[in-house]
Image 1 (tube, rainbow over the protein chains, first blue to last red):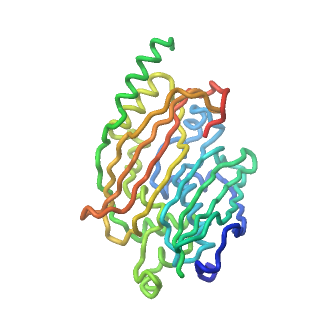
Image 2: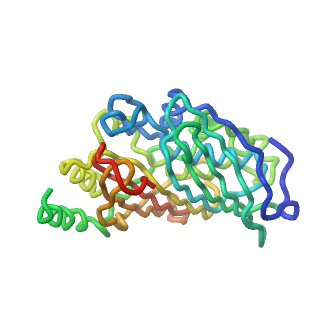
Length: 137
Length: 182
């Protein structure tokens, strides 16, 4: 984890380093279980296909977790999450890659708002998130 | 469905708006093992989630749970796959959609607000209400309805921990056309 980010060092328009995440069946199923989500569409391909999807797909709690962890590596250990809004688009399906990018949208009163986009290599925008994070002074 | 049947169906689903789902306490208190298992998969290396000694020496002075685990603590677990969810107004609504052909399900939006970070040993209580159901919509996945729940989280002493809204699309698969799914 990088050096702790201080509020005074951040400004709107700052760009976060991008990250590629390989979307595999292992990640989807392991993420579903780590978030205690046993809906079959996240671990049983036949059930997922019955719902109109080509394969198992990532649950939203894993998307939240990957987003938090991506942001955590940028903001440092002392930062505190206040709010996270997630808008889901295309599914994360095995055999694809999700590229996460981020941009600081505002910075005031000790809080930063950061927009994170997770772009799936085959299906387009998987997630657009807006996080509110308290940074140390 | 005929327009008359659609109207009758929509009366049935709209009767769920405002209903409270069973309030439940998490079976496991906030604990290091579940936090570590989550961090392994999510690639989260924050020592304040993983190392009690290091966390004690840090700015927080103690280990805390990752923020987005807020909803994880109260999940029902494997029973959902083995037996299905326990009946409550949300599962009744879900079944009603299924019975009318809206068998597809996908979460589309969620917002979590965190009042503070969760400490080891806290027991998360969740109280969920079905807040609203949309009009019938054409989406990229098929025709369906969006419904949204609101959940309030407290600890074992009734202290507020945060809240969540969660929006789900129930749709008829393969009935594609119209605007893209959210």
